Length: 144
Image 1 (cartoon, rainbow, N blue to C red):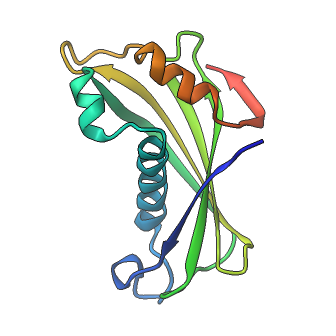
Image 2 (cartoon, rainbow, N blue to C red; image 1 turned 90 degrees about the vertical axis):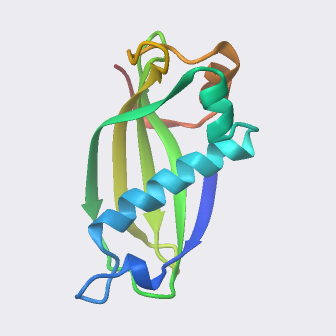
């Protein structure tokens, strides 16, 4: 099973007063990973807009396990944990590992695709649905 992974370096702007990665940076790592996954499959943000749809987040949650510090490399995995039958809503898991490949955090996002024409939740185009189907499903995958 192919799991999309993205390596990122922890930058000065990613740390807080405790000298470890700030909570908002985990969300940014996850967002960057999703965008890079789409790009790796031939979809840029411009392509989404040209096809008349984009993503919207409905909820985010993070569980922290280990600290991550300035200059470390993190590896972020992208796994799908849920999807609606029409593919309009989704739930993604991002496992975030520290430079020793120990699980540092789990970041889960719930979201949906929206039509740019009417700003309503809608399924993405068929070719994009196939890209989502190619993502690995978590053991606890659910139908939303």
